[in-house]
Every structure is written in structure tokens, then in C-alpha cells.
Length: 511
Image (cartoon, rainbow, N blue to C red; front, side, top):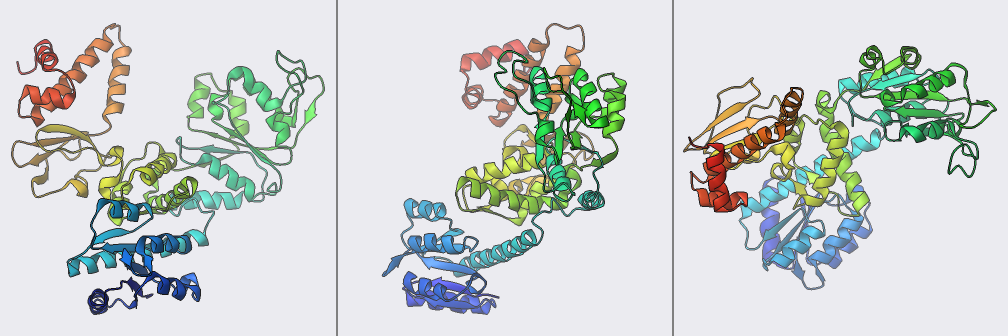
């Protein structure tokens, strides 16, 4: 293993850390100032550098913060722990802004310092393994068995020009699969053109697909090539094909049949040589039965079908994808990439990801901006992943479907994890004292479902009914946290005490 580098002008600090780390089987190398560190790095390549670096913040001959900045430019994945006897907020903020792994104030507890350094080493080794895997398979979309089936299908289709239909939930990566099919096909040297048929107004979609001649409609000052012409010799990806207007489906069928079409306002047939890959999150067979999708077009597109699994069906890929998106987000924002703990990854792995890979990517963008430290812990994950737990009453929180225990970040001796109902939509956890935590799943979806069922009736008071139920639930939750104290509950809710008194009377709370 590579050594831990210790940088401190205090010989006693260096001596104590060296001996403690050697007892743990961790090799060390010591320096008295930043200049020595930079000189030692000059003759080494990245594979010969330190496993982790522990540096004082104030030393003769250089600042630990300046050293941190320089090290991060040279070795961005190296965990750096900053030590200082000046435990002020500015130093801590500067250390984290510059990418420090952790901040260690002096005097420190030696066992805790060693444990912190060991965590930094383990994180460094995990990152090295992750980087090796990503470098070895940069085009891989995932390693789960469900994705391996997709990869095998891409391999079988690599020398084919056959039309492919990709199905899967929104955000599952259908365009990435389409690009992979193009890249590994005989058409790889040709263009890859993508169009989302659901994102373009019906009046413009025909022109987008087939182009138009000058004067074909108001505003058509010049002739324009459509996507079919732009993709000639390559691949055209038609995303969300299930939303294509019915009359345009007829024109698309003609192009798929003989490769000819007319521009809008045109009189001369245009010939194109395009491979079409279509994608949808909808059930096209059902749309055919409903009469909103042509059956002949469905059979023309459905030559080969690839089903892309949802992210919850390939949980093994969550750690790899998370690290990839964290790195990608950092590059886009021009900041130091953040690392994520195993506990946080485990919790992410339990999430249902209704938005699939796109939602995971958005979560990683959020973490890059919002997580307070360089290492993301479970408590740093967004509310939709971990829920919101506060003790002191009966509180609804959201957990992924199938998860029947509280996240580790919220467990404590006061929580009795005996589950009253494990398989129902609701699960109740006993908590010592007067607190009871009721776990529900995705209350917003349940609210939407309740609204839809009420709207399907002859009622005309849906707004009032649901508003009253929402207000009642909210006020009761607030009163639970304050043990019935109305003024305190009103303060927590951000309403006046007269308002909460009036609402309690109107809604019959406590009757």
C-alpha cells in the first residue's frame, strides 16, 4: 500500500502519528513543510504518490490550504486531512471549499485521528477501484444481469440495420441504448439524429421530421431539411413514439415502407436511407386497442424489441452510476468531485427511483451543490430518499416501498424498531415515550390517486374536501409534536394562533 504523507513542522506531532499509524500497519512518510511535499511529488507519477495526506494548516514555508489547492490540481482523488490548532470557522470553511476530506482540530484524540486517517485510506482505495472499473468499461451502462441482457442484444444487432423498438420507463436511459446501437452498427460513421416527438407541437412536428419547402406555410422563408434527411446514411431516434399524432403516423409508415417522403409543400419525392430506432414508455399494444396508434405502424416498428429495465431492477448499478454522476456533476460545475460513503450508497440502493437513472443523476447534481462536506453521508441525501424524521409525536415520513426499517442516519436508542405492520402500505414504528412514527410511501402519489378517484365521481367539492383533510392532518401532526400546545404548534406551522384555533373548531379536531 502507498504511504500516508504527514506534513507538520512540529516534530512531536509527526512522531506520534507515525508510531500510531505504524501500529495499525499503515506506512508513513513525513515532511516538515509544503515545499518538501511538492519537491517529492516532482519525481513521482500518480501511481507512486501518497494514499492519503495529513497536513497542518500553518507552517513556516507554506500554508496547508495552499498545499491542499496544489495537491488537488495534481491528484484530485487524494483525500487530504487538514490539522490546525486554530479551530476557527474560516479555516474549516476554507479547507472544505478547497476539497479537504476532513478537518481535524488540535489537540486531537489519537485513536479518533487514526480512525479518521483509516477512513480516508479506505475511501481512497475505493475510489481507485471505481476509477479502474470506469476506465476499463467507459461505455458500459451497467453491470446488473438485467443490463447484461441489453448489452448482449446490442452485440447481436451490431451488424444489422433492422428497426428496433426500445421500451422502458421515463428516465431509464433509452436514448443511451439507441446511441450504443448506432455506435456499434455499420452506420456508425453516419449521423445520429434524435427527436422527441412528444416535446414538439403537432403543427411543427411534420416540418421537423420531413422538412419544408420555401413558402409552404407562413414564416417558411427558406427551404429546410427535416430530420429524415439530416439522418441520411445514419440513424434516426424517435423518442416517445407513442405520442405521435395519428395523421403523422401514416406518413411515417410510408417512409419506413419504401424510404420515400415529401417535404411539407413539396412535389418531388425525397429518398432517404435511414435506420429508425423508436422508443416509448407507454404500452403501445394498449394504445393500438384504444385506436390512437396504428396497428400496422406498430408492427413495422416492433421488429426487434429491447426492454430497458428500471433502475430499481438493477440496484447493483447504483454505486457505479452514482460515482459516475458525481464526477460528471463536479466537472460541469468546475468543483472538486465529492465522494460518497458506503452507508449512503446502501441507503440510495433501497430507494425506488420512480424517475430512474435521470432521477439519480439529478440527485447527484443536488448532492454536488448541497452536501456540506467532501464525503457524502446518509444524512446528506435529499429528503425524498431518506424521508424526514422528527421525534415528539405522530409524524408521517416517506420511505421506499418494501423498506421496513428506518434509515441508519435516524436510528438511536430511543427508537424501538419492532414493526407493527411489515407488508402493508403503512408501517408503524414504536418509539419510547409518547412518540410514534408512521411510515407512509409517497404521500404525493397517494394524494394524486385520491384526487383522481374523487374527480371521477359527480362531486363538485373536491378542492374543499381534500383541503380540509390536508389541513386537519397538518394541524394534528403539529399538535402531536408540541404535545397539544396550540400557540407553539401555530408557530411551527407559520400561522397565527387565532387561525389555528379557528381551524381546530371548523375541522372538529379533538372532538
